[in-house]
Length: 496
Ligand code: BES
Ligand code: ZN
Ligand code: ZN
Image (cartoon, rainbow, N blue to C red):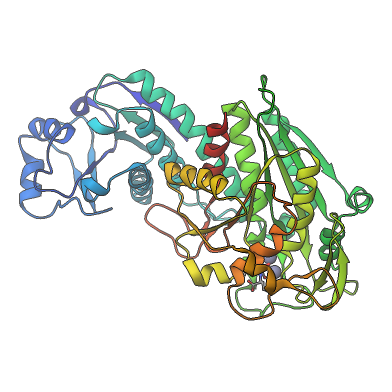
C-alpha cells in the first residue's frame, strides 16, 4: 500500500474517497468539517440535523457526489465522545475507514486529519491504523478478493504541518509494518511455521534490518543443557531452535540497561501426552505469538535505533505426543540447574521460557520482558480485552504499563506475591510445572517463570487472550493481532 501526504485544502482533494471523523457532540460540524460543509452549501449540517450523522463510535456515513468537493465520496466515521478520544480511537477510526471503503472496492483514499491531530502523534496513529486495517488472514485463498485491495492512501491536514505529518507517517509505517510482520508469522499454520522455518524467517528479517542473529540448533541446545526446552521438544520429530536477535546501538552509555525480550514460540501446542481436546485445537498454531512479537519489535527497533542494547531470545519448539514425549511425572533439569516435576505436559510454555530467561541473563540482559500465550486462565480472568501483566519488580512493571498506555495496547497488572510459590511446590523436585489447586492458573504460570529470574527485573505478559481475534472487528481482521509489539518498541525507545 502506497502512503503519501496530500497538501491540498480539504475541498480541493481529488480522490475517489475522502475520509474523516466526526465527534459525538452537539456542534458536530466544526473545524475541518465546517470548511467542507461551507464548500458543499451546508449539506453536512443538514445531515447532522436529520439525525443520520451522530458521531457515535465507528458509525459510518458515506455520501456520494457532494457538490463543491473534488472528492467523489465523503466517508465520515464516528469518533465518539470528544472526552474519550485518543490515539487508540483514532487508530481504530482510520483502520475502520480503510476496511469499509475497501469492502466497497475503493482502491484509493485520502484521510483528512482534523485540527487536534495535525501532528506527529496524530499522523502516526492514522498511519498505523491504515496499515493494520489493511491486514487480512486469507493467505491461502486461491480465489483472490476480486480487486479489493487498497492501493494508495494519502494523509491530508488541510495545508500546513507537512514535516510533522511526514514524520508521523514514517514512524507509523515502521511500527505497523513490524506489527504486521508478527501477524504474518502467527497466521501461518504449523506445517508452514516449524521452529526451523521460524528461525529462517528471523534470519531473513535480521539480514534485511541489519541486526545480528544467532540460531542454536538441537545440538547446541543440548550442549547448553537447556533441559526444560528439550523436554518439550523430545516428543516431536521437528527439532527445536533458540533464536537470538541482537540490536546494538552505535553509542551506549556505560551502565545502561540491556533489554531482554524472551518470547514463547511453540509452533504447535497439542498439549503433548496431556493432550488437548480436538475442538479448537487448530488455533494452537498461534502458540508462537510471544516469540513472533519479539521478532516484530526487533524489526521496528532496527529502524528506530534506540540508544539501548536489546536482545531477543526465542525458544522455539513443537509440543507433540510422540513416542519419545515426556510423560506426566517426569523430572527435568532446567538450564539453571533447578529440577522440575512435569505434572502436566500441556504447561510447556513456562518450561521453554525458563531456559529462555536463563539464557537471556547469561547473555547480559539486565531487564527482562517475556511475552507468551501462556494460560487459558488469563482468558477467564481478562477475556480477550486485556493482556495480563505479572512482575517481580513493580517499578519495571510500571514502565511497561505506561508504554502500553501510550501506544493503546490494553494490559492489566495481575497479582504475583510470594504466597503463589506455595502452589508450585513439588514432592520429588524443586518445583512442579502446574499448581496444586485449581485456582489462579495465570498467576501460577507466572510464579513458575519467576523462579528463573533470580530477581532480575522482569515482566511477564500473558497474551493468550489477546494475540488472536476470534471474530473480525470493523477495524481488524479475524486472526492474529500482533499484540505487544507496539508496547515493546515504545519501552525500548523510552529507555534510551
Ligand atoms: N498454549 C496454552 C495456553 C492457552 C490455552 C492459550 C488455551 C489459549 C487458550 C498453554 O500451553 C497451555 O496449554 N496452558 C494450560 C496450562 C495448564 C495445563 C496448567 C492451560 O492454560 O490450560
Ligand atoms: Zn500447552
Ligand atoms: Zn502452549
